[in-house]
Length: 102
Length: 204
Image (tube, rainbow over all chains, first blue to last red; front, side, top):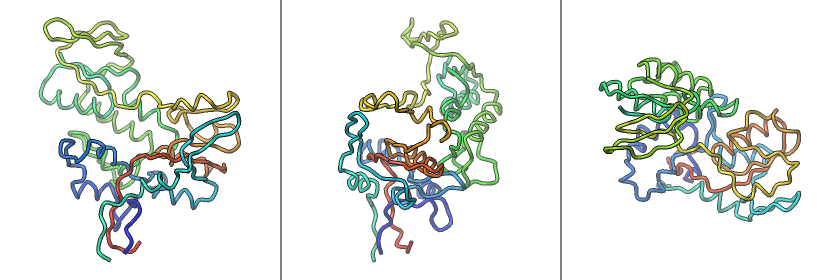
């Protein structure tokens, strides 16, 4: 079974934030985190518009007309340059901490 | 006296608890209660479900706990909360400095004069100033560059392709909205941190 790349908006009919709450994800105090940086990982890649939906990179990419690029690195006149780091950036968002047996 | 700086959800929740325990206090708000929420773009909706609007003593009481209310309803919730316990808010009072006073107290210089306080609670939030990377100054002057906090809707932008810099929730949502308005969108992705994905073993 392939792990999910990012949390979906809803899982088994309930919102992902509801799951995060009921599985006590939000109850961990800052002092108990393995790294203070972990407190920054609580944003879901989703939107609340129109009843709520997933809004991760794959959703944007499949819309057609939204071009995903790497980081903006330079602006020269009317030209902008972007780093070739899109895969790494997307990868950092699709990190999977838990995998299950096949 | 206790002075709480900021009348967003944190300042209001502190005020609620101080009120419940009978502690004399005031809440100073530079502009209007819930200002940061009021400043969101027009189509903004809560990203976490409605039930998460649950400040101390004031749980969500609507009919859609797993829905996502629009911006103005978030503000309305905060207004109702403040009214529910008559929060002692002074809007339009900007704190300009906070210094040590005599005997371990504090002196706040505000747009409405000096205020002495024994205890000060800073509930000002973390996002008052837009983060505009130095590179943003390199864009040609004829190009409109808008910070997310000043963005209201696609109609405020001149026609044409749009570049969105930053792929956190805001960058992704604005990209979607601009796309829906018929524009070609370029999204410069960064490393905004997301909740790690969790495998469920279920087919998706």
